Length: 210
Image (tube, rainbow, N blue to C red; front, side, top):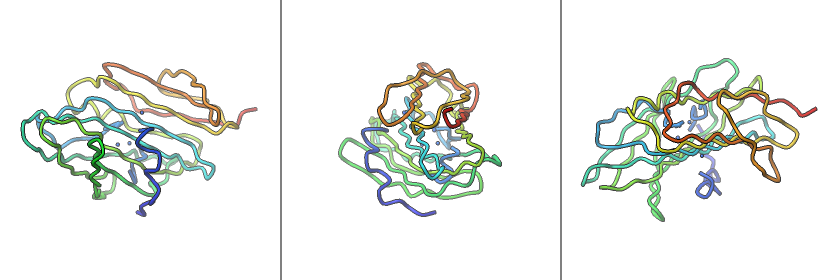
């Protein structure tokens, strides 16, 4: 997998399941099966899904995870992605842990159907873990795994997902209720949930506007 050197340009102010090379299979969308204990809490996630001109969907995800211990704690987790005939393997992955102005890059390990991510959570803090990747679709449908979030054992305080399509495209299906957003350059759709326990994966489809 190739790293895109410009992958994080603009990601901090934007970053609404962590869904990285299979990322896109990408809540987050810690959609992750976590090798965790009760030492941390998955609090919130924001993920942006943007359809690009080349047919790829770019995923920019942010996950807030709190270290409940009074000492530094190592977090290991798996980032799964769906196996579907209409999704090509993700093209690149980039991940990092952000503490204000301090950034720690995460080097993922790759497996057949998930990525392995490891980072250190500082004592008592709630950093943002950012994941970014692209994935090619074949039938104008994208899927992001959300239900694995339930492995954390509690509802997310907030979950926000934004789907951005070029102006010539419109959303034709979404597995969650959404509201249209005003944006100059995109047809934009937002899914906002509080006390969120996902009951299904996020799946959406699009077509050219007639």
